[in-house]
Amino acid sequence: MPRRIFSHPRILRQLELYLRGREPNRCPFFGLVEAAVAVPLVFDEGVLKLVLIKRSQSLRIHPGQIAFPGGRRSPGDKDLLATAMRELHEELGIPGERTEVLGCMDQEFTFTNYSVMPFVLELKTPLAFKTNEEVERPILLEVESLDSRSFLPEEHTYMGRSVNSWRIETPHGTIWGATARILYRLLTILEELSEPSR
Image 1 (cartoon, rainbow, N blue to C red):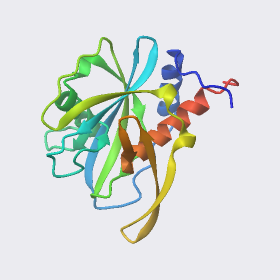
Image 2: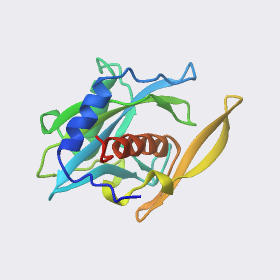
Image 3: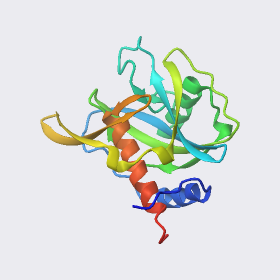
């Protein structure tokens, strides 16, 4: 398979058109707590990178896991996009004016009973992170180093139903659960958009 090239800024415009041209699928489970995550992408020194966080070991839920910045919807959030933007600012110190919203992906769920809406964002450079107590450290992953074929399938039972999920090993640790499903979906979209025929 030819090497994929994600290094041209055009790929983010294509991604934006793709996301805005479809209605995201909703979580198939009901009664879950609403939450949202930011899926931040940035061209840093000409390389497309994905920004994640390693969660603090002191957290009660998902301690030490690699995740996207995000959390549950607060009463003051007017919508789930506001939740994602607030969490991005709280966890990584990135204000809304340093971002551009490209669109949202399919809603996911977590095994801790949250429904999660992922919002894909483009960050402006230079990057300047200011983490809070929930974040052990920010993580930058070069998108070109990731491949959807490297994900390992997993099967779980949730609310009495069999559900498919993914897991991938990275230099920063294992990514699994909702984060892996969101990442896998993002990669498959980018791989499709970067095919030579497009």
